[in-house]
Length: 400
Image (cartoon, rainbow, N blue to C red; front, side):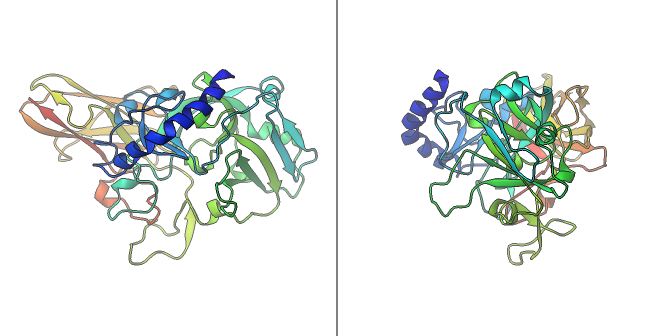
């Protein structure tokens, strides 16, 4: 495990220089575009847009999203707690299962790989605050562009199988999850998430691989929770503890953070916050252009292939439309065959030929099986947490 020791040394060396780049990134330009990739990189990652080094907050640049599977070294990173273990002994590591179970379990990595059925699921991981900086007025929180998302094939074990091995008692209703990261201040609440048994299906897994490799350290090594179709706040990293209870446990990150107005529009105003809230759960429909990027220079009368990705909560993408005249007219893009499953990105492409010089704005909007489609950015309902932004994406190229 030499690379885990390397993580410890590299993080200490990088800490003094990365924050300066993160402050610059956090205060420039439109969402994602115009934000500079850091001059330094974290272990197992190429240089990404950096907002913080403690805890690590890294965003993927727009060019990442011309591919359906996100490379591990380009995958975004979001931690809440600054105290992350810098070395993990995989021989000693255990996931402890307790609470309302017939038998407490202490599950090792070896147990996961040898004693359970191995499964894979390809699913999008997206921060609930992705694209937060597109809200007007500014909403509180990390001012992400649109690159706090990624798509990977995750391999591991069904959570249901682990719970069946422990045996659930009759009054079991809730499952709590905690990882190995810790707060720097003792009164800061732990990052614990809960899942009701009714939300459990065969796609919810405890994963130890990502795109055919061990999980990158910064993406939750050695194991993390995978809940396809939902925002990443519940995908607990470095998962070490599972506790089954019969009552909902009131927790900061369930009852205060990651919540939106509980009304039909999921909206409010800065002047009048809606009093009742609900947790963010299922992702809404979204598309994003990976190529071309903003300010790409293209030649007049050349053939330009627009490429990008679309996704939702697993309902299923049925179409992506492209506009090359700033939203006046729309054409159907070509979708890939969707062979990676309903929780994966759906790749799209569209070819067009610019016929005049100057600035050309290209837009994309996705539509799913439920008939939901991306709204224009100005029509996305505002909420004080800056969650669930899914406005139509746009890039502007320079035709010469």
